Image (cartoon, rainbow, N blue to C red; front, side, top):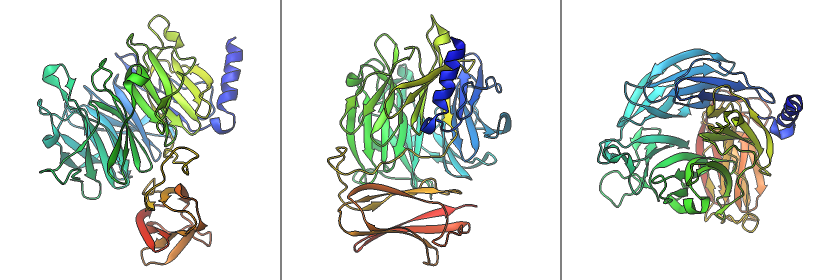
Length: 470
């Protein structure tokens, strides 16, 4: 039976589009911690790579793995993708700061949220040196701390989820959490309500925001509110016009508290839910029409701290149950069909946080009204290239408000000379995306430096800056 199971696992993971990126997984039994590495297409993980803190999250950026050692350790451990057993460096985030996330804007600049502090830390992730801080004391609740946690970068904006939990009242969350917005060019706070005195954050629909995931010019936020009160849900924010669609899916519809969320596409998410008996389940949800699909099969219902999407596959960190911990490990599902592919693949200690070793963004599909239920954009708009800076290729999203008009998407250098025409012709209304591989129309790779991509539709022109690093 074990031989057959291994064969099926290898066959499923190595076939076609399901053989995606490698995975780095932090593992823990809550007393000690370690890590596992699963190469693309492998049926067995390399386990117990190195000793880690028992409370971690892990992120990946441009060939490096960043392990954020949280409460009681207060540092970031940096590993190289090519040798995940050997630390490259380790740097402190400040004693007692309890770092919760790290978000990158370039190879030389990143932000670290510190849950037990009032200052966001700015660092150079290449050497760990401190570049500055951003003061969030103005957003704190009555206990003096804003409880900053998960973050997302979209274009030149950093979005910081602040949970506003009153430590003096057993970490009771405020009725509404907030997103603090930072301009990454200046590191200044962005006022989200100019009609109110002072610099205002983006007020969310419910309390205690946990997961914050970007897809194009939208943010999807999981908000758990108070545990057991069923007052939370999944909120969608439109960054292009600064509005919220509200809670498009409630915790009542999900049947429990939201533990974690990730996106498979602009409108499809997977969410971990804890029911009234503390059993965990994973559900696919449709953000466009607010529906919840059937819970995924072959899950133990044990504690599941995280999941991750990599191309066409979903990876679930299933820790197993107390009565049968051997049911734990990494589970794999097809994001097109929600069908179980393989698993559990053992990580030795139970899995905790998953990093997909790829910089690919969440796909933003093209759409027209009537095919997906998405509303057409009110005006044409050029999104921000991702990643930016880039050294291989960058994705450029944009929206077209009306069809049957000429559209041009062109890359220029700083002197205004055309480098590459990415598209010239007629497109349907809706969302689109093109990639630039750094080459000119002549097929020769352009030199390192800054470039502009311009979207032209009729008389309307819009440009965004992007940087190529070679």
